[in-house]
Amino acid sequence: MILDLDIGNTLSKWRLKDAESSEIRSRGAVWTREEWRPGADIPDLDVVEAVRISSVARAAVLDETVTLLRRQVRHVYVARSTPEALGVVNGYEEPGRLGVDRWMGALAGYQLAGGCCAVDCGSAITIDFVLPGGVHLGGFIIPGLRLMKESLKLGTRNVAIDPESEADALLEPGRRTVDAVNHGIYMAAVSAINRIYSEVCDQQGVALPVLLTGGDARVVSRGVQVPHAVWPDMVYGGLEASFPLTFAERAGKMSGAPRVPEPVSLEKIRAGLAFSMLL
Ligand SMILES: Nc1ncnc2c1ncn2[C@@H]1O[C@H](COP(=O)(O)OP(=O)(O)O)[C@@H](O)[C@H]1O
Ligand SMILES: CC(C)(COP(=O)(O)O)[C@@H](O)C(=O)NCCC(=O)O
Ligand SMILES: [K+]
View 1 (cartoon, helix red, strand yellow):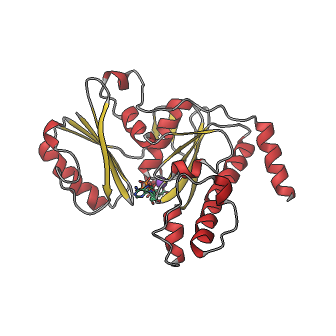
View 2 (spheres, protein in one colour; view 1 turned 180 degrees about the horizontal axis):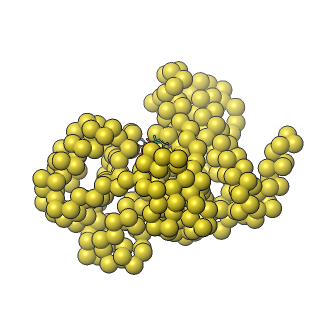
View 3 (cartoon, protein in one colour; view 1 turned 180 degrees about the vertical axis):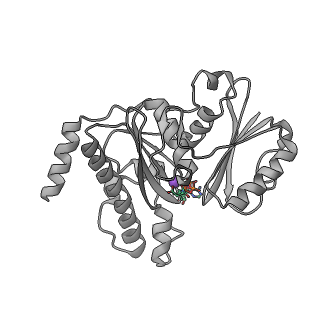
C-alpha cells in the first residue's frame, strides 16, 4: 500500500492507495497537530511500503512525522517546491518559499489540463496560475472561509455554511449575525476568485480552465461563475506525478482527476470584466 499525506494548516488528510491496482482503499483526516500516532490517527503502517508527503505545517512537525515514518516504512518521499518540475517553471522569486500544496496543485493541474487556474480553498484560499507553456505566474492568497469568520470574533465560528445551500440564497443580505457573516465571507471569497480569474486571463490574453480543491471547494464552487471542475485529490495528484509508483501513475494517470472544463472564450471574460467596471 501507498500512504499519501497532505498536511495542511487545519487538517491532515491521508489516503491509502493500492500499489498494484491503483485503487484508493481508504481515506481520512485528523486535525493537524504536533504529533502523529499511527494506528489511531493514520492507518497501521505494517501494510505501507511507501509514503508520499506534502506538508505546509511547521518544519518541526514534518521532521517528527518523517522520523516516525522512516522507522517503519521503507520509502518516504517528501515533496518540495522546486524551481522547475514536470514542465512547470515556478513563478516565485524564491521558488522554495511557494507553499508545497500550491506547487503540487500547479503540477497536477498542468499535467491534467495544460495551462490552468488552480484554486485551493482550505485554511487559506490560494489562486495560482500556470500558462499553457508551463510558466507559473505566482498567485494570490486570501484567508479561507473559516479564518475570515474566526477573525470577526462574533461567536459565529461554529455555524458553517451549509455546503448544500444555493449560491443565490448566500447572496442575500443576512438578517441575523450568523447569516450576515456567512453570506459576507462567501461573497468575499467567490467575488475575489471570479475577479482575479478574469483579471489575469485578460492580462495574459488566455482563457484558462479552472480547477478547485480543498475542504471548502464544493461550497465555493457554487459561486464561481466560470466553468470549472472540483478535484478533491488535486494535491495528491501532484504527489502522484512527482513520485509515480504504480503502473497507472507511471503512465501519467492521477486518481480522481476530473474532466477538463472547457473555459469560456477570452472575449466573454473580457466583456464580463468591462461590464463589472461600469457598475
Ligand atoms: N469536516 C470538516 N472538518 C473541518 N473543516 C472542514 C470540514 N469540511 C470542510 N471544512 C472546511 O475546510 C477547511 C479545511 O480545508 P483543507 O483544505 O483541509 O485545509 P488545510 O489544507 O488548510 O488544512 C476548514 O477551514 C473548513 O472551512
Ligand atoms: C498559503 C498556505 C498557508 C495555504 O495553506 P493551506 O490553506 O492549504 O493550509 C500555504 O501554501 C503556505 O504556507 N504557503 C507558504 C507561503 C506562500 O505560498 O507564499
Ligand atoms: K489552501
